[in-house]
Length: 213
Image: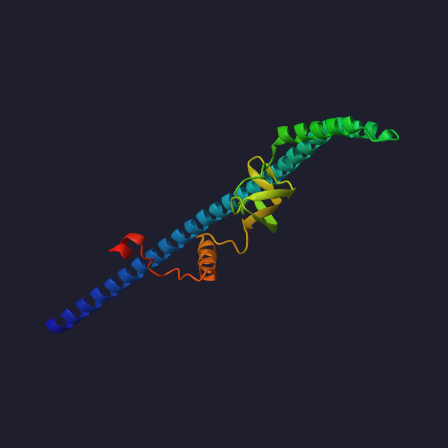
């Protein structure tokens, strides 16, 4: 009798534990669903923020492009305005039957002044050591002077605000061909002259004093 009661009590306990586990499992599932819902809502908010930031960046980029284009156009407009005086003087110099040399020189100076104010700088290359960063060699000429120097400028080079705008087209000096730097040619000539007189340049000549002895 007692054994039957113990079996019945164990069955009731198992049912209670099973019901508790099922109840706890349902609670965990609902908790996970709630966390998933919150995570989706949070990711949605982040996605909206990213979309807004992207739209703001695109608007900023387009605005900067318009500003940059406007600045470039304004700068070109100012340059064109300053060159109008130069253009007027050109037309006056060319309007006569003969070209006014003084007028052309004046125009040249005015044009250079306008461009120099904007940042143009002419390279002074003649006589300078050849620099491949600033010069473009189109030919070489033999010279007795220093080798590797600019001897003639065919087309001047220019800098724009310190940066190379156009390299100078130059002629560069080089050493004369056939030149004997150590003077060996002169010594050979002396030896040939001595041989022509019948003397051996390597012969030890005896002085008159040694002959008397």
